[in-house]
Image (cartoon, rainbow, N blue to C red; front, top):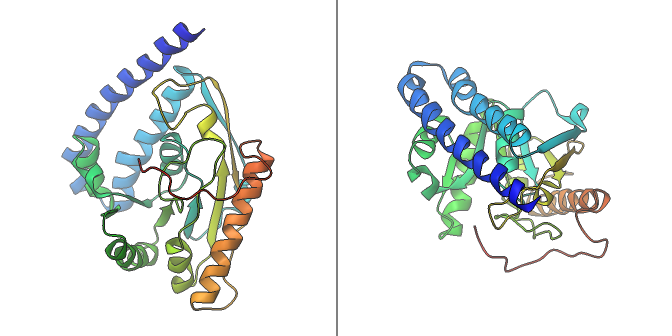
Length: 257
Protein backbone atom coordinates (compact mmCIF):
# COMPACT_ATOMS: atom_id res chain seq x y z
CA UNK A 1 0.00 0.00 0.00
CA UNK A 2 2.77 2.60 0.77
CA UNK A 3 4.36 1.89 -2.62
CA UNK A 4 1.00 2.18 -4.38
CA UNK A 5 0.21 5.44 -2.64
CA UNK A 6 3.66 6.79 -3.46
CA UNK A 7 3.01 6.06 -7.12
CA UNK A 8 -0.43 7.68 -6.93
CA UNK A 9 0.97 10.77 -5.17
CA UNK A 10 3.80 11.14 -7.66
CA UNK A 11 1.40 10.72 -10.57
CA UNK A 12 -0.85 13.38 -9.07
CA UNK A 13 2.00 15.89 -8.82
CA UNK A 14 3.19 15.21 -12.36
CA UNK A 15 -0.31 15.65 -13.80
CA UNK A 16 -0.92 18.74 -11.64
CA UNK A 17 2.34 20.34 -12.83
CA UNK A 18 1.50 19.63 -16.47
CA UNK A 19 -2.03 20.92 -16.06
CA UNK A 20 -0.78 24.06 -14.30
CA UNK A 21 1.70 24.92 -17.05
CA UNK A 22 -0.89 24.42 -19.79
CA UNK A 23 -3.76 26.15 -18.01
CA UNK A 24 -1.71 29.07 -16.69
CA UNK A 25 -0.20 29.68 -20.13
CA UNK A 26 -3.67 29.73 -21.63
CA UNK A 27 -4.85 32.09 -18.88
CA UNK A 28 -1.96 34.47 -19.46
CA UNK A 29 -2.82 34.66 -23.15
CA UNK A 30 -6.55 35.34 -22.83
CA UNK A 31 -6.90 36.61 -19.24
CA UNK A 32 -6.35 40.31 -19.89
CA UNK A 33 -9.01 40.25 -22.62
CA UNK A 34 -11.74 39.20 -20.19
CA UNK A 35 -13.67 41.08 -17.48
CA UNK A 36 -12.42 40.13 -14.03
CA UNK A 37 -15.26 37.80 -12.90
CA UNK A 38 -14.95 35.72 -16.08
CA UNK A 39 -11.16 35.87 -15.91
CA UNK A 40 -11.25 34.50 -12.37
CA UNK A 41 -13.58 31.66 -13.27
CA UNK A 42 -11.54 30.73 -16.32
CA UNK A 43 -8.05 30.95 -14.80
CA UNK A 44 -8.46 30.09 -11.13
CA UNK A 45 -11.81 28.44 -10.47
CA UNK A 46 -11.60 26.03 -13.41
CA UNK A 47 -7.98 25.18 -12.58
CA UNK A 48 -8.81 24.62 -8.90
CA UNK A 49 -11.69 22.26 -9.71
CA UNK A 50 -9.34 20.31 -11.97
CA UNK A 51 -6.83 20.03 -9.10
CA UNK A 52 -9.59 18.79 -6.77
CA UNK A 53 -10.67 16.28 -9.43
CA UNK A 54 -7.09 15.01 -9.81
CA UNK A 55 -6.70 14.69 -6.05
CA UNK A 56 -9.84 12.56 -5.91
CA UNK A 57 -9.34 10.24 -8.83
CA UNK A 58 -5.55 9.93 -8.78
CA UNK A 59 -4.58 10.27 -5.09
CA UNK A 60 -7.87 9.07 -3.58
CA UNK A 61 -8.52 12.31 -1.66
CA UNK A 62 -12.26 12.98 -1.55
CA UNK A 63 -14.22 15.65 0.30
CA UNK A 64 -17.51 16.24 2.06
CA UNK A 65 -18.95 19.70 2.69
CA UNK A 66 -21.44 20.58 5.41
CA UNK A 67 -22.85 23.97 6.32
CA UNK A 68 -23.27 25.20 2.74
CA UNK A 69 -26.51 26.87 3.86
CA UNK A 70 -24.41 29.19 6.06
CA UNK A 71 -22.67 30.79 3.09
CA UNK A 72 -24.14 34.30 2.71
CA UNK A 73 -25.24 35.66 -0.65
CA UNK A 74 -22.95 38.67 -0.33
CA UNK A 75 -19.18 38.07 -0.25
CA UNK A 76 -17.47 38.63 3.09
CA UNK A 77 -14.25 37.75 4.95
CA UNK A 78 -13.50 34.02 5.19
CA UNK A 79 -11.50 32.93 8.25
CA UNK A 80 -10.38 29.37 7.56
CA UNK A 81 -8.23 26.76 9.26
CA UNK A 82 -4.98 26.16 7.39
CA UNK A 83 -3.37 22.72 7.28
CA UNK A 84 -2.42 22.04 3.67
CA UNK A 85 -2.45 23.21 0.09
CA UNK A 86 -5.66 21.29 -0.61
CA UNK A 87 -7.93 23.88 1.01
CA UNK A 88 -6.42 26.67 -1.08
CA UNK A 89 -7.59 24.75 -4.16
CA UNK A 90 -11.00 24.05 -2.70
CA UNK A 91 -11.81 27.53 -1.39
CA UNK A 92 -10.66 29.08 -4.68
CA UNK A 93 -13.18 26.86 -6.45
CA UNK A 94 -16.05 27.15 -3.95
CA UNK A 95 -15.98 30.95 -3.54
CA UNK A 96 -15.82 32.96 -6.74
CA UNK A 97 -14.51 35.47 -7.41
CA UNK A 98 -12.10 35.37 -4.50
CA UNK A 99 -9.02 37.31 -3.42
CA UNK A 100 -6.70 35.58 -1.01
CA UNK A 101 -3.84 36.74 1.14
CA UNK A 102 -0.64 35.09 -0.11
CA UNK A 103 3.09 35.46 0.34
CA UNK A 104 4.45 37.99 -2.15
CA UNK A 105 7.18 35.61 -3.32
CA UNK A 106 4.57 33.15 -4.61
CA UNK A 107 3.90 35.51 -7.51
CA UNK A 108 7.38 34.63 -8.79
CA UNK A 109 6.50 30.93 -9.18
CA UNK A 110 6.66 30.17 -12.93
CA UNK A 111 3.31 30.00 -14.71
CA UNK A 112 1.08 29.68 -11.62
CA UNK A 113 2.43 32.81 -9.94
CA UNK A 114 2.42 34.75 -13.18
CA UNK A 115 -1.24 33.99 -13.80
CA UNK A 116 -2.10 34.74 -10.15
CA UNK A 117 -1.04 38.35 -10.72
CA UNK A 118 -4.13 38.70 -12.92
CA UNK A 119 -6.48 37.61 -10.10
CA UNK A 120 -6.13 40.48 -7.60
CA UNK A 121 -4.47 38.60 -4.74
CA UNK A 122 -3.35 40.47 -1.62
CA UNK A 123 0.34 39.65 -1.89
CA UNK A 124 2.03 40.62 1.38
CA UNK A 125 5.59 40.72 2.65
CA UNK A 126 5.45 38.54 5.76
CA UNK A 127 8.83 39.90 6.81
CA UNK A 128 7.18 43.28 7.42
CA UNK A 129 4.06 42.59 9.54
CA UNK A 130 3.17 46.25 10.05
CA UNK A 131 3.17 47.00 6.32
CA UNK A 132 1.34 43.74 5.61
CA UNK A 133 -1.44 44.70 8.03
CA UNK A 134 -1.88 48.09 6.36
CA UNK A 135 -1.94 46.43 2.94
CA UNK A 136 -4.55 43.92 4.08
CA UNK A 137 -6.73 46.72 5.44
CA UNK A 138 -6.58 48.86 2.28
CA UNK A 139 -6.57 46.22 -0.45
CA UNK A 140 -8.93 43.93 1.44
CA UNK A 141 -11.48 46.73 1.73
CA UNK A 142 -11.13 47.44 -1.99
CA UNK A 143 -11.72 43.76 -2.83
CA UNK A 144 -14.80 43.53 -0.59
CA UNK A 145 -16.23 46.75 -2.03
CA UNK A 146 -15.77 45.31 -5.53
CA UNK A 147 -17.77 42.21 -4.57
CA UNK A 148 -14.95 39.72 -4.03
CA UNK A 149 -14.66 37.21 -1.22
CA UNK A 150 -11.50 37.72 0.81
CA UNK A 151 -9.87 34.51 2.06
CA UNK A 152 -7.65 34.80 5.11
CA UNK A 153 -5.88 32.04 7.00
CA UNK A 154 -5.66 33.78 10.38
CA UNK A 155 -3.07 31.33 11.73
CA UNK A 156 -0.68 32.85 9.18
CA UNK A 157 0.83 29.54 8.07
CA UNK A 158 -0.06 25.89 7.59
CA UNK A 159 -0.43 24.31 11.01
CA UNK A 160 0.10 20.52 11.36
CA UNK A 161 -2.91 18.27 11.75
CA UNK A 162 -3.86 18.02 15.42
CA UNK A 163 -2.78 21.57 16.27
CA UNK A 164 -4.28 25.04 16.01
CA UNK A 165 -2.46 28.35 15.79
CA UNK A 166 -3.32 31.69 17.32
CA UNK A 167 -5.60 33.81 15.13
CA UNK A 168 -4.30 37.20 14.01
CA UNK A 169 -6.87 40.02 14.14
CA UNK A 170 -6.37 41.30 10.60
CA UNK A 171 -9.35 39.43 9.13
CA UNK A 172 -11.70 40.42 11.94
CA UNK A 173 -10.58 44.05 11.65
CA UNK A 174 -11.20 44.00 7.91
CA UNK A 175 -14.73 42.65 8.41
CA UNK A 176 -15.60 45.11 11.19
CA UNK A 177 -14.37 48.11 9.22
CA UNK A 178 -16.36 46.98 6.15
CA UNK A 179 -19.50 46.28 8.17
CA UNK A 180 -19.48 42.64 7.03
CA UNK A 181 -19.39 39.31 8.85
CA UNK A 182 -16.60 36.78 9.04
CA UNK A 183 -17.33 33.26 7.83
CA UNK A 184 -15.46 30.66 9.93
CA UNK A 185 -14.47 27.37 8.29
CA UNK A 186 -12.98 24.23 9.85
CA UNK A 187 -11.69 21.10 8.11
CA UNK A 188 -9.40 18.11 8.54
CA UNK A 189 -7.48 18.33 5.25
CA UNK A 190 -4.17 17.70 6.99
CA UNK A 191 -5.18 14.10 7.69
CA UNK A 192 -5.08 13.27 3.97
CA UNK A 193 -2.72 16.02 2.85
CA UNK A 194 -0.05 16.50 5.55
CA UNK A 195 1.69 19.83 5.99
CA UNK A 196 5.09 18.21 5.58
CA UNK A 197 6.11 15.67 2.97
CA UNK A 198 4.64 14.96 -0.44
CA UNK A 199 2.76 11.70 0.18
CA UNK A 200 -1.03 11.96 0.05
CA UNK A 201 -3.25 9.57 2.02
CA UNK A 202 -6.58 8.37 0.58
CA UNK A 203 -9.62 9.35 2.58
CA UNK A 204 -12.39 11.93 2.87
CA UNK A 205 -11.68 15.52 3.87
CA UNK A 206 -14.53 17.00 5.86
CA UNK A 207 -15.18 20.75 5.59
CA UNK A 208 -17.57 22.55 7.93
CA UNK A 209 -18.79 26.09 7.20
CA UNK A 210 -19.95 27.93 10.29
CA UNK A 211 -22.59 30.65 10.61
CA UNK A 212 -21.60 34.19 9.59
CA UNK A 213 -20.46 36.17 12.62
CA UNK A 214 -20.95 39.91 13.02
CA UNK A 215 -19.11 42.17 15.44
CA UNK A 216 -20.98 43.51 18.42
CA UNK A 217 -20.09 47.15 18.07
CA UNK A 218 -16.98 48.72 16.56
CA UNK A 219 -13.43 49.55 17.48
CA UNK A 220 -10.54 47.45 18.82
CA UNK A 221 -12.58 45.75 21.53
CA UNK A 222 -15.23 44.58 19.05
CA UNK A 223 -12.52 43.35 16.69
CA UNK A 224 -10.82 41.36 19.44
CA UNK A 225 -14.13 39.85 20.59
CA UNK A 226 -15.12 38.84 17.05
CA UNK A 227 -11.71 37.30 16.45
CA UNK A 228 -11.92 35.29 19.68
CA UNK A 229 -15.43 34.15 18.84
CA UNK A 230 -14.32 32.94 15.40
CA UNK A 231 -11.31 31.19 16.92
CA UNK A 232 -13.51 29.47 19.53
CA UNK A 233 -15.91 28.23 16.86
CA UNK A 234 -13.12 26.88 14.64
CA UNK A 235 -11.38 25.27 17.61
CA UNK A 236 -14.57 23.48 18.72
CA UNK A 237 -15.37 22.43 15.16
CA UNK A 238 -11.86 20.97 14.81
CA UNK A 239 -12.43 19.01 18.02
CA UNK A 240 -15.80 17.77 16.73
CA UNK A 241 -14.09 16.62 13.53
CA UNK A 242 -11.59 14.64 15.57
CA UNK A 243 -8.82 16.81 14.15
CA UNK A 244 -7.85 18.45 17.45
CA UNK A 245 -7.53 17.17 21.04
CA UNK A 246 -10.21 18.51 23.37
CA UNK A 247 -7.62 20.20 25.57
CA UNK A 248 -5.62 21.79 22.74
CA UNK A 249 -4.65 25.43 23.10
CA UNK A 250 -3.45 27.83 20.44
CA UNK A 251 0.17 27.14 19.56
CA UNK A 252 2.57 30.05 19.04
CA UNK A 253 5.96 30.26 17.42
CA UNK A 254 4.93 27.90 14.61
CA UNK A 255 7.40 27.52 11.71
CA UNK A 256 6.37 29.37 8.57
CA UNK A 257 5.75 27.68 5.24
